[in-house]
Image 1: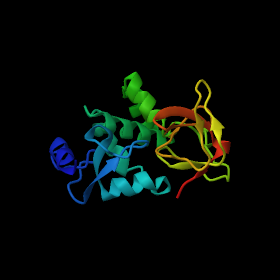
Image 2 (image 1 turned 90 degrees about the vertical axis):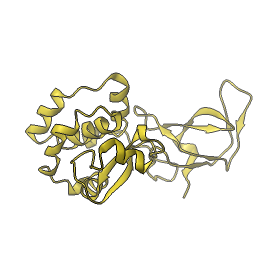
Image 3 (image 1 turned 135 degrees about the vertical axis):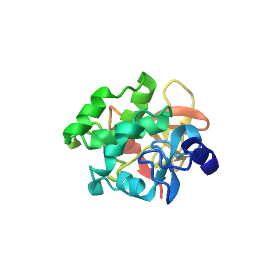
Length: 191
């Protein structure tokens, strides 16, 4: 995949156009398992993406160019980063110009970057640990699955959960090949 992204980006960071220390970044909630949900980024961009408290707003003026990318994961990351910087006037101007189709916008909003801290939906397991998209959880009790004769057994590991962006009590995951909704009070985060 690294070679495909290097070819797609002409060996440049897809956000700031740097040419050194490039690596693959999977755009959450995906794990970067294909070029359709990953971007090539430099160390500077990666560090600031992963540690929002270190963001240098001047570095991100590069989003003025990258937000027009033809590649979905680049546009999604540009939108998320511009939202993190919305206290800057220039960032809001760029957001007002930017276009994402409905599917891209839905994907972009899964990070919650567009919300104020008080508005964010935070999913926590039965022990109070914060859950994220893609986490693995363990069921702490047997759960009868509505609409089927299946019972999800205590101790079952549910891999790569998806969080409900509107309700902090709901997550989704596959149990015995069936996609189900699970209440967070019945799971604990797996290490």
